Image (tube, rainbow, N blue to C red; front, top):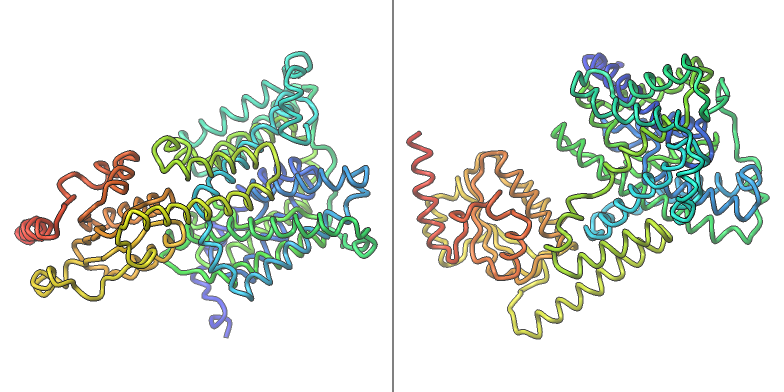
Amino acid sequence: MLKKFYDFKNFKGDFTGGLVAGVVALPLALAFGVQSGMGATAGLYGAIAVGIFAALFGGTETQASGPTGPMTVVSAALIAAAIQMNGSLDNGMSIILATFLLGGIFQVVFGFLNIASYVKYFPYPVISGFMSGVGLIIVILQIFPFAGMASSKSTVAVIQNLPSLFTEFNPYALLLGGITIVVYYIFPKITKAIPSALVALIVATLIAYFMKMDVPLIGEIPSGLPTFQLGNILSIDSSAYATIVEYAVVLAVLGSIDSLLTSVIADNMTKSKHNSNRELIGQGIGNMIAAAIGGIPGAGATKGTVVNINAGGRTRVSGILHGLFLLAVLLGLGQLAAHIPLCVLAGLLIPIGFKIVDFKGLKHLLKVPRADAVVLVLVLLITTFGSLIQAVGIGIALACLLFMKKSGDISEKGMEVGKVADIDGSKPWQDEIEFYEEYKSKVIIKHLYGPLFFGFTSYFKDQIQLLPEDIKAVIFRMDRVPYVDQSGLYTLEDIIFDLRAKNIEVILVGLQEQPHDMLKKVDIIPDLVPEEDLFDAIDGSFEYLKKKLKETTVE
């Protein structure tokens, strides 16, 4: 009977995966809690609630969820706004928890309304700029704690107060923070069996404790089960409603994107398919319960999910066990965590912040279409030094506006673009029939029409995933693709990389000037597609493939 609900042959892997994911999540939950402004306890509460309930109700079997960098940055902005409105954290807590609760409710609604199908249409420059901005916020806000000083509430305040860093820094804090970063990066070269973040946390904390270093500490963490915290939300002043709704929407959208991106990574690792709508419902329920017990919201955590899968996790039981491990820590080891220096947590968050920054997108700023570069930089700057909410809205609006302008320019030049972004591979064209009849079991020909832009990339990926496993080559006819934006560029790169990894030959035919230039500028040509795999006309690609396939058969 039990086997109907759970196959116990997976328990060993699920137990190991959940335990390792929990160990990885522990120091990060404490660090994100501190950065949010609500304290380490709130980070731990959030990790427990989201970890257990997102796994229980979510749509990704191996997802490990908890506080993440992007969600924490938005939470911190909300908490700062609530404190400014009400004078203190305690007075603003009802607004904060009501926002977290509403954000979770929005995610559940998103799941029932199939909003997940629209999240995938976010342009790459907007996501890249936003995530890079979030990474920079994490790094900048940890500068003062890393030096043993009180944390500033905004990146602008940090920049303005930088001169004080040179006169008020704590040398012991700098030493411990430096040790934390060194251990974090060096320990994986020794072994990856134990998470380096945990090792760095323990080593630096023990040094501070036994050397009696005078540095700011986390302080007391309440032990025992958390209590219900939503008793005062009905008394919230109506003037705060707009703030609550505004931040709740951002938390819901960002948490959805964060979780679904991690779900895709989990699918690729386990060769499975997640249920995106159910995933949003599970994440929403987890965030609602986190709010009810005073925890910060979270999302699918990429690092925790990856280590869970690598350690053997295969079902949602692994995610639940990851949350239960953190609950056990709360009940048994809370007092020990009080001795962790804040500079050590800063030393953990700084590398994590840099990992969130999209260096690939930044590296190609001068190579991708100028409009995409402008959107990316603008979103990054607004995110880092302005409003996270406005950054996403302005970025999407600007990306759509610039795309419409580009489409208009293409039409004015009289180019035949067919439908705006379409793909077809079911019927051969007249000049393909002879080759098709002979090699249709080995070679797939895909015809691309129109600009390869952000609104088309998800569909493009889905179509490629439907290709038979036993094919030897794919020909992309791109005669009618006049323009490729940054989203399309990176999608094409991912697709070609995945096909190459399966030893499938990729041929590009009829590349127009702009797509050809873009592919060369970011080194897709010749790193992924050698010059000999480019053809102006389809006939040349057929002769080339005939020889290639003949050689493969002989071998």
